[in-house]
Amino acid sequence: MKPSVILDEAAISRALTRIAHEIIERNKGIDQLMIVGIKTRGETLARRLAKRIEQIEGKPVLLGVVDISMYRDDLSKKSLEPEIKGTDMPETVTGKIIVLVDDVLYTGRTVRAAMDALVDHGRPSMIQLAVLVDRGHRELPIRPDFIGKNVPTSREEQVVVALSEVDDADQVFIKR
Image 1 (cartoon, one colour):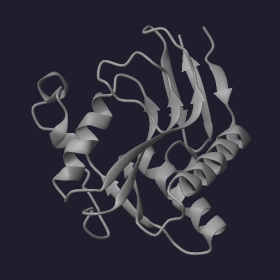
Image 2: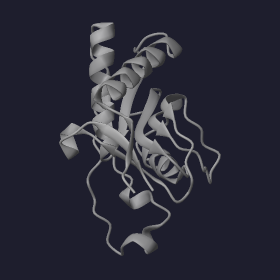
Image 3: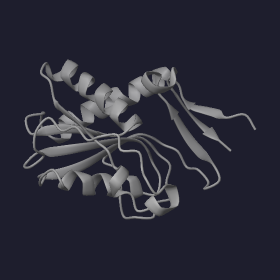
Image 4: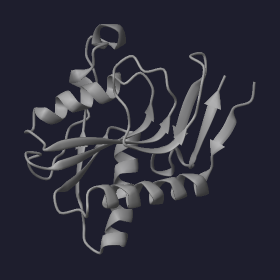
């Protein structure tokens, strides 16, 4: 069955612009804010969000990247030696409002792992979650603060996010 596109390049761009405005509004500016992307596509989306926020606010926002490889609860199922991609934080997260960014929210396990990785770098005053797609089927009590698009799916379906920086195209599609 042919994959169905649920977000094209323009829709992804509009969603990120809306999320950027929502982040600024909810946090009354960006003074204590740090955007942190989860490797790999979350990192790309975080960079795009940070750029949009800078365009809106006229000043840069702190941008970090978190690698969850060593924090996953399925290491034994994946591989005995996970590929470490590296965490990069511009400064401590202590006292900051962290907006954690990922492409798809599904079970919540990736976000849980990212929060564990974050607290190894300090104690944020708050962690918020921004996702491009929320597809449901949570296994943990995690819910996003900022959502590009809610997409009800079955467990048999797969939501695939392609971003030009990684995949040479901007689109989100469902594979059945």
